[in-house]
Length: 423
Image: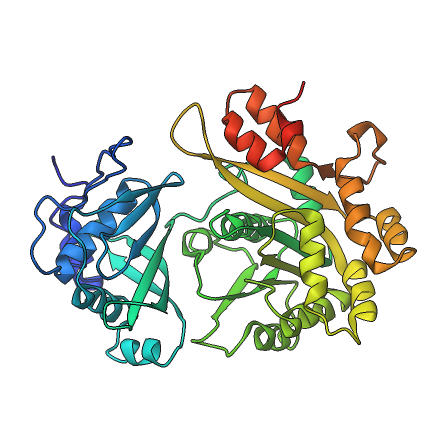
């Protein structure tokens, strides 16, 4: 098979950015769906070289992989359209995984950090023969290994093109709800559900909106989308984005939000609302007139509220809960489900707009009743909606996609429950 990239870059490209050796021979690989294999290397040496690693990694990306996992004494795994495949015939030696750790982290102290019980979140970049770049989000975590000290490295391929609303399948009514003038917008879902991709598409929408120029402060861990392809085409636009990476530029998400409050932004992106300090800082920012976007791990609207509330200390829970409901504007939960009709995945979303009517209803009831109230709100028939209401139930969207043949019966039941296949 021919390489996917031209093997000889131009002189200008070579001078401006040296190509990462090994990627020039990378190519898309046809997967074996029955054996669950997608072998990325034609020849597998006894030891994995840096060039072999780069070739394997880039071939996985060209084959449609979203994530690649490396562990000692196991072949690498590539997740392609939501399915795991073995990416090599042979298992990796511990020394192979240590080489990958040093190559991607960029320093010999990576193993010391792992042995010190630290979890490493960072980014890695390959320079391509055509002058482009392929970026990855990397997590390295200590695991039990042959000598007791192993490491698992998970690499998420980041698209070089910033997604737009069409790519993430956001329609006009949804983007209107996703872009209030202030308050908090939460995009929730499991790991790998496309939360960051959807938030990047909304950020791109703001940057390209010539009617309302904005200053955006973007705090991520790590930075996944650089928006270079967007800002490079924004000649004459006053909109601007400043990005900070937790662990590289700032200590924490909470520090990033507190810093943002002194930088006069219109919009603050908080990569993940994972603790009390970050959520509190985000609420403070939203209640002082800023629009805050953040993500969290959850599988439904009511579960997301429950998860956010549990971060507050018991003595402060009630007052903080009222602040949270006052600040919330829109809550979207996203699932990515394999398509039944063709390769790829389709987003299934449950969401709810927090209107004045809904806030008054919640604030008039005990906090313990809120999840049940939200479950009822999301599931109400569309005909019962007021003009400002916007809601979508996972059961309803699963049923629609199942009837259209876009998703399987198994996934409709898994995501939407029995109601997703009932007539």
